[in-house]
Image (cartoon, rainbow, N blue to C red):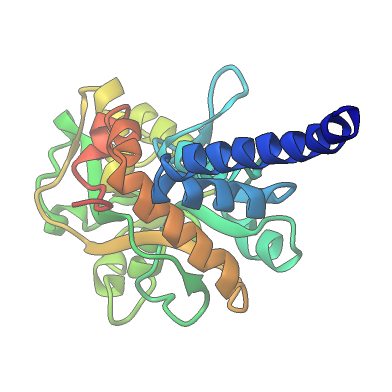
Amino acid sequence: MKKTSKILAPIMAIVMAALLLVACGSNNASTGEDAASSDANKAAGSGTVFKHGFDLDYRPYSYIDDNGNNAGFDVEMAQAVCDYYEWEYQAVPFNWDAKDAELNAGSCDCIWSGFTINGREDDYLWSKPYSDNTQMIMVMKDSGISSLEDLEGKKVGVQTATSSYDLLNDEEGQKALADTFADLNVYDTYTIAINDLEAGAVDALAIDVTRANEAIDKNSNFVCLDEELGSEQYAIGFRRDDTELCDKVNEALDALAKDGTVAKIAAKYPEIEEYITLGK
């Protein structure tokens, strides 16, 4: 009888352990495919650092706020992608004309900052588009300027390396219009350009409508002309051989649109909310 007990004891222990494993497996299965997929994504992303390159002064998509914090729709979306995969987020803010140097040097993994696809289709590997945009002319309400024709002989400002700048220097774009200006003043940032418009140093600004809306919200004396300079779409620009990273970001964008994260972030920026196309 004592010999039988010594044999049965370890057998019973093995049986109990097996039953416990089966129970645990059953509980894990009940969490569903979404949870399993999420866990797999997080496990695969563990230890990855995502270096987000962005314009430090392109409100409301990306900027450094008055407290020195990284802010904007694109910044929050990049952080949401990192949360999705449990990547470490690293901000790489720069002046816009340094974007290619930063990307090519490997200082950042992408340019994600209200970056226009149109005219640059072959220069980068692009994510899916996530926002529409339009180039406009912004003036002071009392400027007497109400049409593009009225810009003849005027001083017009534009930010360097932007779609508006490209349009005004492109023979197939709006160069003929720019040739009628008294001057085309080129600025490093929109903030400086907007301050000069308010101070009267320039008569008008060629500017993205989303950036203009943000400025108009702060100063009701600004207004955009009804006529457009051009239209475009924004996407994330990667190095051309970074297909794996681009695919993973696209996958995360789809998931974040589906679960409402994109809409939640966009609602914080009413001046661009209507232009965000993800999930629509």
